[in-house]
Image 1 (cartoon, one colour):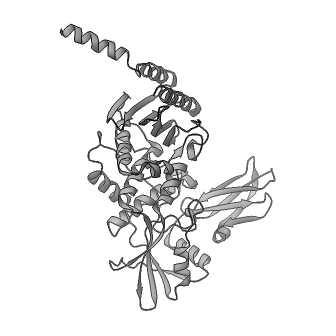
Image 2 (cartoon, rainbow, N blue to C red):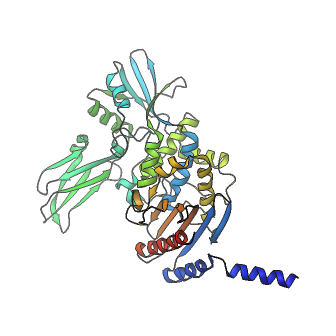
Image 3 (cartoon, rainbow, N blue to C red):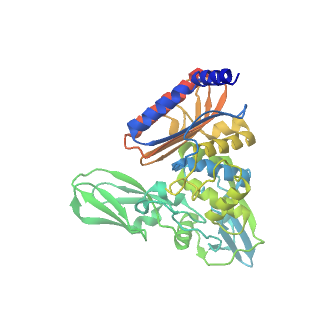
Length: 427
């Protein structure tokens, strides 16, 4: 009898519809010389359909934003807090909340913050006393400091904490915001290629000339400081804004700006690192009187993520840090939580869609679309986690992680796309 049961089990395993995946993924690991993790889960049946290295830890890159998304969903509410403020005599004192939307062109613009400050007849005073976070995150690449995918975190961002520099190729330079025009200088000699360099600890910028004469434009992260914030506000509002370090007042009132989904959508579809980092600061401000990334992460881990299969090593909002480590099965478990909590119609409109939007616009093309997910890419790492809608209309949750490959990312992406397409067709 026992022998017959064993035979039946062996036959069932050998006939598994996903048996072919193990062979393909092992072959890919050998070919790419990398590490692959893959999980497919049925949220209706609460059943893992397939897993490969599901308990191994991987560098998630921007899959970290799934954790940030979950934090925001649980803490922020429907609308984003823009400012905390209090009126004292003839002064309006205000503190930032971390809201990234002020003058940031990538998100829905609501003029409420601008109008509130512009129309006040009080003396405007900005304080950053509630900010207790380093501008750059732990484990970020220090050499990326001037790139816009690595902008600094701050209590009151303006213009996305970035600037645009445009050079006509000869002698004319323009900046947006105009405030940074005075920081630009041109090299006295020519190099083979035109380049732009910002000093690491200031906003002094050098444009390195070349023999090629043509118009060029660069987007750069700027060095943040309270002094820079009030200068930019004064310039934009056309009225004086002062800076004083005034302790946060617990009686401060709250001004709201934009719908939370306006931030979530850009973060999840376009993988906006800046918004992701600021969301964790926004969460901290809702939970306490201090803007601190670590505080938010620890709170969410203790209060919302204690039941994940594997303890996450989570250190920032964006996934820029190489210190982040998650397992594929924990990412799937997190998506399962989100799937249970958020209306599905709303959820899928916030995610990148294969062949249609965001970072998946140029891949996973199909009509109707079948992949709704979050990408995660750092050099030598590429991940994709989210939802797969099968040919028969079933919804599966998956996490597909690839770390430390030396082949072109397109080769890894091709494997992922062909694998997910097979699962789509067979279900």
